[in-house]
Length: 242
Length: 310
Image (cartoon, rainbow over all chains, first blue to last red; front, side, top):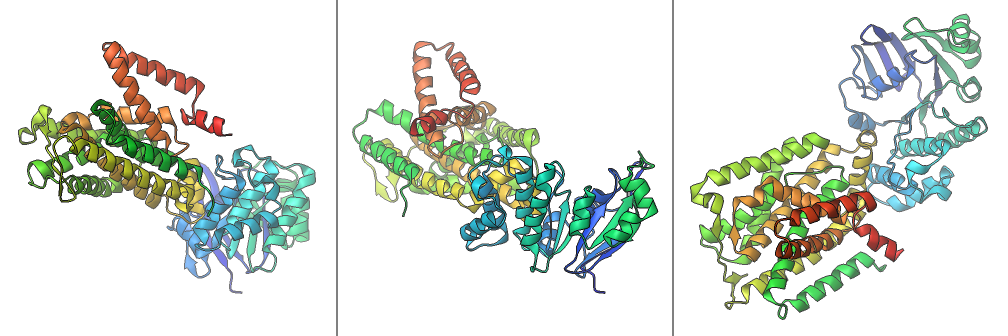
């Protein structure tokens, strides 16, 4: 296997709390993987270390053959790794269209307007185009956040809880739009998720975290049936550091 | 080509200002020339504010522009207004290119206070320098513009006309800049720096570039002010001068490139009238005006223009 992303011996602590304890993971190209775990299990910390927001205390992260540790988020984005956020990171005073124009303008120098209009259509955002991002409903904010992350045509897309805070009947719609947008593009998708219906439906592989460790890794059926996952993730048992 | 109301308004305003150049009384020309010079400084502040930065030290570049221009005539023997304007602008931009390397790393109160500190350092140097006239400054006498000798009494009118033309072209250029990718990126930085970095752009480079542009505009404003007043002194770099620019920026708002010039003209007119009829309390009048703006028009006076247009 020639993984697009490989983490070796990743470690991170915040005082007495261990957020990552010797994480070893490799992700195949063009795959869809879900990261699950209770709050504080270390999923977002893992994403933050991969994307350069946090520097690991130890270990390495290799992306497409390049070492990521020590690089800034901007440098990592330039290598082809993009992300969305648990709390959508938007330009609140700019309109939806302007948010996408900024992203397009950074990623591509030409045909920015046309590409933005195409993206608005692709993500069903055209009717919100003129509305300031700060006044959008949560589901639309999530979509816009993901759409902006996809503008740079990444090889690896990391989605941090793409459906959290969204009404139950909108979750599948959002995921369908995202998966349709990345299908056939050769994009590897890693998404953090709490909703097991979403996980089962969209992920080909699931990695379960608990207290900074990987406790299960396999197909959704294997992982969601695993004893530890049922006890600590699905069952909602409190993690040791809490 | 689509009709742009801002460019059209700029052109009309510039036309009216140019028509006034040969016929308006000297006192009015003086007031307008100062308003245009300060408006240029505030135009730079507008760009910084759109990037999320408030500088309390634009007096540094205003003073540098004024002194560089004045020194070219006073010490350099090159008493040509066109050269002085270029020198004032270039000097401010060059100093900003150095200080900007440090300042572009700071935000909010730290950026404001550091910029203030640099302007006060220059103020301290100027008041201690007897060669530059210390607290009195020195006079500037200019009789040429771009190699053409100017008749006595006409100079101020020519300088004023030149500043009106500069305002048109620079207002137009900044308006285009703000509507370009770089303008949107500046506003994006004001809203969310983290996201800009995660989209792959360098926040530092944009802030640095905007800082230099703002400084160059302040230097140009300083050079025009020196030509209009015919005198430079350390007061140009003092913190109250920088505060005055921030006052004008808040008064006008950052909604349009015309706002700085509109508010600078109102500010100068208000100050002239208030100091004429209430010399001891005119600052209080300005304070009340600022209070009213913050409470009722937080977007500045330009909000009224926008509402009317809507």
